[in-house]
Structure formats: C-alpha cells, structure tokens
Image (cartoon, rainbow, N blue to C red; front, side, top):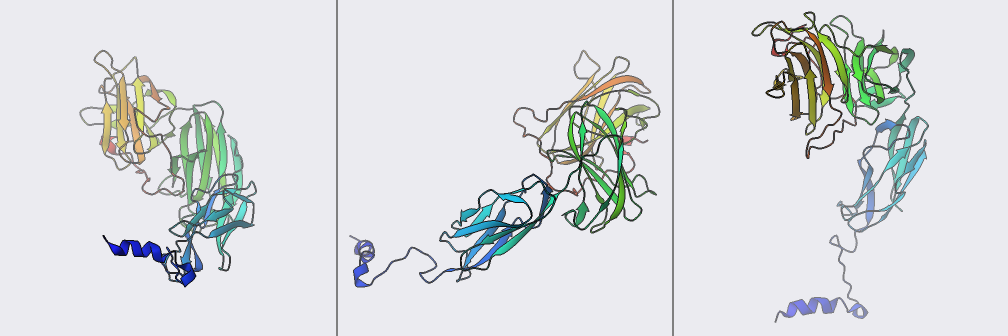
Length: 392
C-alpha cells in the first residue's frame, strides 16, 4: 500500500492543528494586481449596431501570471451611448473577462471601463459611425474629419442607399480637391461588394459603377492615403442596368442583365475575334457562384478570371442539346473576379441574358459573409482588362 496517498488527504483535515491546504497553483499569497487590455479597443461600427470584437481584459496576479481564481470584473459605459451585454463578469481560469457592446443611436465617441476592486481600472474607446440616407440621383457636400470612424488609419464616412426595385444601375462618384479619394460599396449586412480608386490615370477622384439587386447598401467614401481629411462631394446617380464598351461594372448576386454583345465591347483576338461584356464581383472562398448566359442568336460562352488575371472557370455549352452557357464555380480564394459574358463563335454578336443566382451555396458550401472592416487588402483590379486577351 502507498502510505503517502493516504497521508495527503488526512493532513488537509488538520485545520485545528494549524495546517492549511490550498489548491491555488500560485500559492496562498498571490493576489489580483493589474488589469490588462487584451482585445476590442478602438473599434468603430455603425450607430445602433454591435461591435464585432468583444471587449476583453486579463486579470494578472502579484506573481506576474494570469490570476486563475475567479474575480468579479465590472464593466461600465463612461461616455457616449452604448449597452453592455454583461455588465458583471467573473474572470476565467486564464484570468480573462469579456463583454459585448451594442452602440447607441447617437454617433460619436464611446468610452467603456473595466474595473476590479482594489485594482486600477482600464478603459476602452469606440466610435459610433453615423450612416445617413443617400437617395438615388442626389449629391451631398460633406467632409472627412478626425471625429469620423477610423479603420486602419483611414477616416471613413458611411451612407445608406436603398434599391427598391432591382436590378438598378448606379454610378457612385466621390470627388475632392484636397485628397485622393477611395470609394467602397457594401451590402447593409456588411458584405463587401466593390471599390474604386481613380477614375483614370489622370483623375484621382473615384467612380464606382454597379448593377444592384433589390436591397439595402452602404456607401463608404474615404481617402487613398491614411489620416486624410477635408471636403468632398458624393453622388449616387441612376443609370440603365446594362453593360457596354468593356467598362468595369460591379454586380451583386441575384442580378439578371439583358443586353447585347457588340463589336465595341471587350475583344479577344485569340483564334479569331470574340466579343464579350464584363462584370466585376467580389467572391468569398467556399461559396459557389452560379451563372448562366443564354442567347437565341449566338453560341454563348462564360469566362471567369481572378483579379490577378488567371482563368479559373469557363463554359461553352451547358448541355449537348443547348448552346447556352452555364457555370457553377466553387470559390477557391476570396477576392475580386471578372466575369466575361460573350460568344463562342468568332465575330458573333446579338442579344443575351446573363443571370447570376442569388444563392451562394451548393450542397454544404458555407453561406457568404463579407469582411467586417474597411480597406480590403488585395482587391485592386487592373486598370486595363487584359485577361485572356480581352481588351477594351
């Protein structure tokens, strides 16, 4: 028999003899000493919405290690309007305590404090971003300011745009005489849709052309360089839901475009003259893009390219008995893509219908979710459309 196994439990019962036992790995003299910010500071989100990252602190012990015993952390809003998910939290065995934050309806700076008795509190900052309505065929004169939301060093405004009956063609224009503009477009839910930097090589204003399905959207004007402020104008003008002249047009899922291929559209001279219209899409890895191109006057074809110019999918005939094109592509990498709706026959022209399915899943593919922070990396499209020989 192992005698030592029985002596240990027995000693823990000898309190009357002055023997005390502790399960604290840090020893009986370790106490909470400091609070440290771990995650969630300096976030920005639309007023009335929740911050994406919960506010998190760690309780550190007097031994310099995370304090393993649970202590009460009290959260409070010290400035601005916000609601806390859990105002009182017990720290876990890692010393961590966290709470969620829902911003109030009033735009501006928010302050939140985390406190533990007998320890200096820590504070978190957040910004509730205003998002007024911008209606179609309206122009606003506004400005970027240091009080705006800041994402990765870029001051950014937000404007809501509603499309009541899609497909709706729109031209979004941001113009400034004091900074190089940058313009982004999101679904109201947060999914990224498209962007524009310069109108052309000599014009640093931004113009984003899109065909949008019925729904609510967010326009996010900012600057190309960080920490820029100043006056600018923002316009949302309606246009036909059409494609022409090899111009870059961003589209959303759920859009149906009825148009025509002409010799003035994108041209591919590989193996003869082939014409096509082009649309730009932002696709998320793991989702599925389902597209059809139908025509009664020419043999339809589809060509999908990454923003870097690599061919990732194509289709000529959807079945042996039809000359319509059908493409179902499981997205391998999140990013911008160019979809060419064209002809398989050399010098073919005429009317067609391009349909992009609203569904982003096939079998077990994940639902599409866009980025939750502005200024996307690696989404710049080539200023010249020279994938697969296509040119304007």
